[in-house]
Image 1 (cartoon, rainbow, N blue to C red):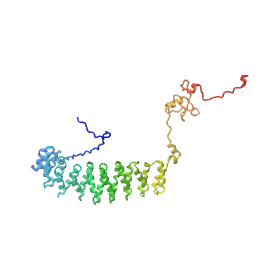
Image 2 (image 1 turned 180 degrees about the vertical axis):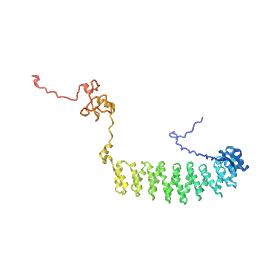
Image 3 (image 1 turned 90 degrees about the horizontal axis):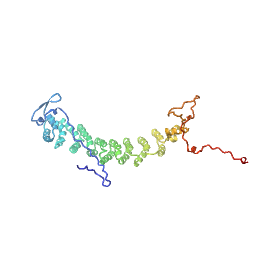
Length: 443
C-alpha cells in the first residue's frame, strides 16, 4: 500500500501547514411534486410531446400530467440516460408554450450537475424572454446555479447585478451572496468592478459583501477596503469601516493602517469603527498604542471616550495616573472627567482604611497537624485559645462559671509532650545568679 505523501520543510523536516481546500458542494436538492409519480418509461415520450398526457396517483390523489410535467421529471435521469434528458431539455427551451419553458428552467440546475453543455446560453437568452413568468423562472434559476457554476454564469451574473428590474436585481444579488460561501475569490472580482460604478447604490451593496469575504478573500480584499474607505459616498465608507474589526483579528498591521485613516474621517460613525478595530488589535502593537493616545485628545467626544476606555489595557497604573492627570487639564466632558478620575484613584493610596485592608493578602491558615503539635507543647496558635485535649476543630471550649473563656487547656496526666533539645541537655531558659562566694566559707 502506498504511503500518504506529507509535504515537509526541507530545512527542519517538519510537516508544512497546507491550507485546507474548501469542499464545494455541487449538489442541488431536487424538488418534489406530482411529476415524481410518472413512470420512467413515460417521462421522455411525455417531455418530447410524443404522448399527450399521463394519468397517475400521487399522495392519495389522481393527477393528469401534461408535457410541462414530463419536462420537469427529466431531473431524475442520470448515467447513460442523461444524454437523452439533456437533448429533451434543449428541445423544451425552444417551445412556444411558456409553461414548457418555465418547466425547463426549473429542471435546468438538476440537469446541469450531470451535463451542462449549452444550458447556460439558454439561461442568458430566457432572462430576456417576453413572458414575465419565464423571466422570473430564469432569475430563480440564476440564484440557484450561481454558487455552483461561478464561471458559467459570471457574465450573466455581472449583467443582472446591474439590472433596472427589481426582481432580476434581487435575484442576482441573492446569488452573489450565496457565492460568498463557496467561491469568495469570484465575489472579490465582482465587487472590484462594482466599486467603480457611478451608482452609489451599487457601491454600497458591493461594500456590504466585504465583511463576508474579508477572512477568506486574501490580499485583494485589502485593496477593496482601502478604496471603499476613500469613497465620496459616506455610506460606502461607513459600510467599509465595519469590516475593520474583523480584519484586525486576522491582519492587525493592515487593520491598524486602515483604522488610522478611519479615525480622521469627517464622519463620526467611521471614526468609531476605527476605534473598534483598535480594540481588537493586540495591545502590544506600538502603532495602535500611539493611535489610542492620540485619540484621547480628539475633538470628537465619542472618540475621546472610546480611547480613554482603552487606556487601562495599554498602560500600567503609574503611567495611567500620569496620563489621566495630563488629560484632565484639557477635558471638558463630565463623563470623560469621571472616567479619568477613576483612573487616577489608587486604593492603596487614596482609599479608606477598610479599602486598604481589603487589599492586603490574608494570612494563610495554620495546618491542623502543626496546630496540634504546638498545642501539645502548651503554645497558643494565633489569636485562638488552646483547645482542650480531644475537642474537635470548630468547637469552642466551655465557659467557666463566671462566663470567661479558659485561657489554657488542662494537661491530662500521661499525655505525650514533646521534649526540646535544650531540655534534654539540661538547659533552661531561666538562669538564676548564684550567690557570690565569701571569704567566710574559707574561714
